[in-house]
Image 1 (cartoon, rainbow, N blue to C red):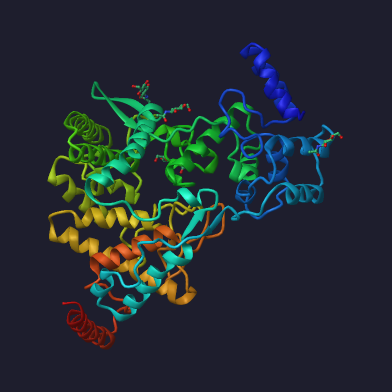
Image 2 (tube, helix red, strand yellow):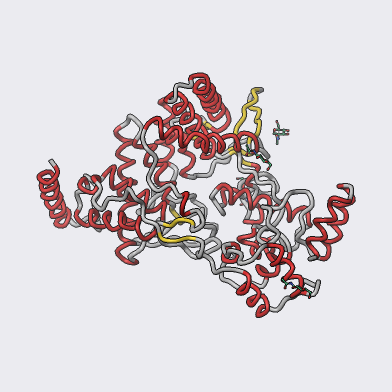
Length: 516
Ligand SMILES: *[C@@H]1O[C@H](CO)[C@@H](O)[C@H](O)[C@H]1NC(C)=O
Ligand SMILES: *[C@@H]1O[C@H](CO)[C@@H](O)[C@H](O)[C@H]1NC(C)=O
Ligand SMILES: *[C@@H]1O[C@H](CO)[C@@H](O)[C@H](O)[C@H]1NC(C)=O
Ligand SMILES: *[C@@H]1O[C@H](CO)[C@@H](O)[C@H](O)[C@H]1NC(C)=O
């Protein structure tokens, strides 16, 4: 039996407090055992324990995610026994070569659990392509659309139960989607809500809050090193905050940095995700509540529809009471330390517009004015994630597709011509960036740099990823929405834009001949 297994087995026989003390003692020798908080997940191989610790701290791979993506070749208890045999009970320094052999024998290389998959409802010439006026953009869109076939994957073991076509319309769609939507919603309400009192009124909103005080398995060695020199309590708290940052998707960002005084500054070690009530999470949940109400209404379940309508109204009120900042004219993340807003710029400050979660049309107008004076529009390639150059990937100078999408869709939903033109302008900047970078690298990237002549973003914990699902999705959506106006033109050249206009007109004419 391995050392860590005996720790776990011992738990049943000890009173909790003694158990804690005992684990503290073990901690002293091996400072990565959890006490106050549960482990990130159940597996003694991937989530906590000696195998994870040894493999990750030996840094056998460029990225700690590599190991947690390796599938087991044998049953977990066999692997744990084999590891114990290997270490002769002293798990502290297995030589790298021995670890490698062990991994080779008991683990698959990552990626083996998936096989290529091509969606059965895929067509090679979908209708929206014909609406793209610029010939270059149109042939690029066609190539992006082809990526469905090369990027599509399905899990091998689930091959037979794989649902292959997209869900049907209307009632069928609601029936299929409802259980998952509801489950997700319940999770956030049961495990991630927080009451905030403003002007004597209590409101319930949501935050990111993962109760796990261990390093992230997929970034194990980084998290251990970041916590060096901290007390055990402070280290566990930092890991919990890093998990919560990862839950937000913004891993990592100066947005979550909160220093000792509650100010929104500091460094990665000051990550305090759980102390903030985020605009985007609450906008998303408001939109979910509306969607759930809509689905229940479609299914004829009026009581449930009304219940979700009420939840959405209560949330809208809470968002306006807690997150709306009348002076700045926009929604802002709210700090549970200072009980005030954090005034920094993020595209997510406008997320409630995208969600349609506000009561006064003037709020939309004010938020557009805020955006225009925020400094966030000063860049040729898109809107940056923040204006802080922290070296983290969810900060300046990186721009991310979902944030462009939320902004542009929000702006295009507003009644004002000015707001909708700004939406188009941002779509044009983003498409041009994606396109120029594609021409240079023949690839789509997960994020881009707001400066320069089309380049991928950087920073953070890993190399920039190419591929890339959400980039392709946002680009195709924008090409579909604004295809009649977007251009690939590398700016300013009157002759080429004239030429491209006449080419566009010609294309439009031929498209009409073909498709009318
Ligand atoms: C571990 O060692 C024991 C005793 O030497 C042996 O019987 C067993 O097969 C080994 N298990 C594994 C998985 O290597
Ligand atoms: C809330 O968290 C607990 C503990 O992790 C979990 O068992 C429960 O399923 C969660 N609730 C929902 C609705 O997901
Ligand atoms: C931290 O933020 C506060 C308030 O925004 C500011 O007054 C202070 O100068 C900042 N400190 C540092 C070190 O940047
Ligand atoms: C913020 O509000 C909470 C709860 O209402 C309160 O306990 C806390 O003292 C307040 N903090 C500050 C700095 O005002």
